[in-house]
Length: 120
Image 1: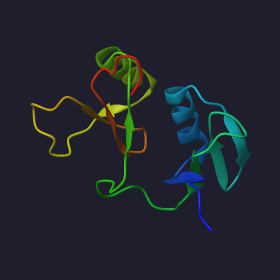
Image 2: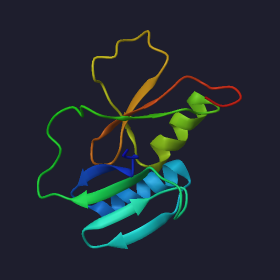
Image 3: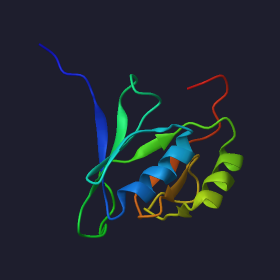
């Protein structure tokens, strides 16, 4: 018996809004939406997905798990993400790293890696 990864669950004060942000980031559709769960995935049959669920509290500490994005052009992607509503985040990464740390509209940190040529 084995298990496969179904999704990464992200606690959210406003799951529909945060799911829509991530759908734009990844250019994925929302494949399921109910009041207590919103799912963003490449399509109905491709997982893992990002699953947004409601919680009453706001984020208060640095995430222990975060997403890494592999862009074709890091600087252009950072500009696009900032325009979508991301913000720059400081998590102690220092000035000489090859990635950029951002936060989504609810403060969840994620990284935009250095430019990847021909895929990851």
